[in-house]
Length: 272
Image (cartoon, rainbow, N blue to C red):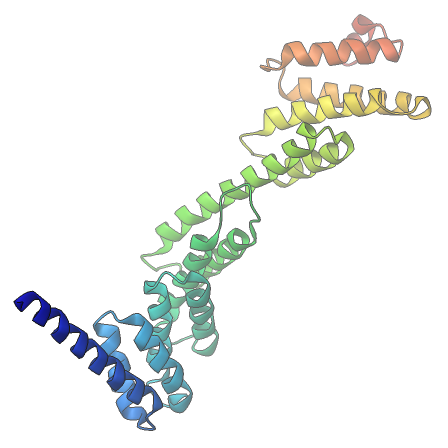
């Protein structure tokens, strides 16, 4: 019986609280709304706080409190893990108050929100690129910030993710036997990320793609494309003379040399 009374009492209090909050939303007392928004924020009731801040901020735009109100509003969405909205508000805060009290924190968190939105490497990495740009701006603008080491760590993570994305995209063309597209994608990736940990594999995939593309070409284009394969073979061997792909690479070379009527020994001597 007592338990039922507790439930009824809790429901009654909840209904009363909701009713009071609805009245507050409709009120024209913006000082009261501002006070209650702060109270809701302190109580970690971020949804209610954000709804009230949305009404209050335009009314206090020209006041000394405006920057802080915008900061608290952004923090509401950040604490609710709505990183897309939070990031937008943090960036807007930096634009409005570039030398304000919260500029440094907002600059970092704006980039961090993009970092949290960045998906795994297989998917579109626009958020990762936005985060890289944001963290780079933060580090350049606030070099003495205690957050710089953390920002640099995120930059490394994101850069590695872009490298992996580039590698996976190029390899996908190869796996799908779209060799012309694979050659282009692999070449672009190798240029853009010259220190990639995937470099040896990507150079091998490009060489193999060149060979297969030449092999499947019409007769009129084969000689030219096998010559490109041969040139790429020597580039590969110059960089990776002891490669784990040596056996496969040698087979490509032997087949290419036969097509071009090249004596392998003579050709090797000419390229020493």
